[in-house]
Image 1 (cartoon, rainbow, N blue to C red):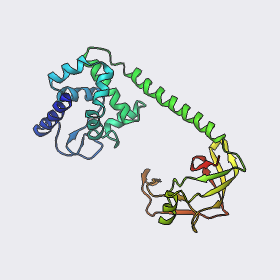
Image 2: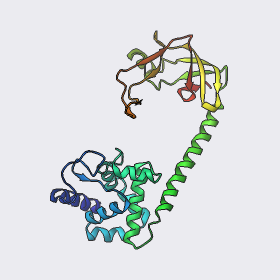
Image 3: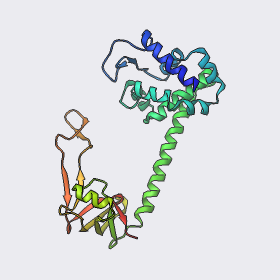
Image 4: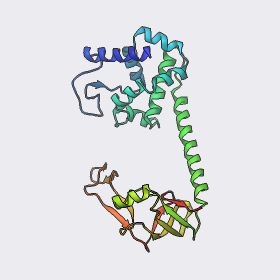
Length: 258
């Protein structure tokens, strides 16, 4: 706790003195607002050397690598992720992307582990660190795929399924009835594509005259091919599905009735 307070105070002092601030430059380049954005890992380590007092460095050296990363990930790590633009496509995040590292938490872990190794005179072994995170995500993808394969095997043509309202409700009345366990929208599986994890469902009961919300583009992004950027839709579009209609769904939008 004392260490985090020292770091917080140090950041305020450095910011006020101009050591980690300068004239604002456009986001994603050298600065976000007034905070300098490192260009690569070596630059990150240089900035940490500036930010951490010698007394803090001594404490870091006395910790194990895992202790340092674990203790600093939420406090100072959050400051780095926010102020170094790791969630916002800064030049530092793009540097890590070029190495095959895409999650800001992974970037933070590499920065912390590398700094701890540098302080203790150990090899940084960047490629080894990158491989660790890449293997982690590959394993996570394989596990997710196996989970989905197992789950969709429980969905069969002819089964009755219950809608889980992932896309929201058609009305406040429908939502209230659902909250009171009095609004089960039911359907029957009429077809199935296991390789796409999708089921075709005929709605037999919608619990509202509009039926159910089939799709809603609120909060979604669409690709603007002219400028090759993802943007919010210009207009909100909600699609409903009434009783008697059949549509394809991701299987996770329905629960088996057993």
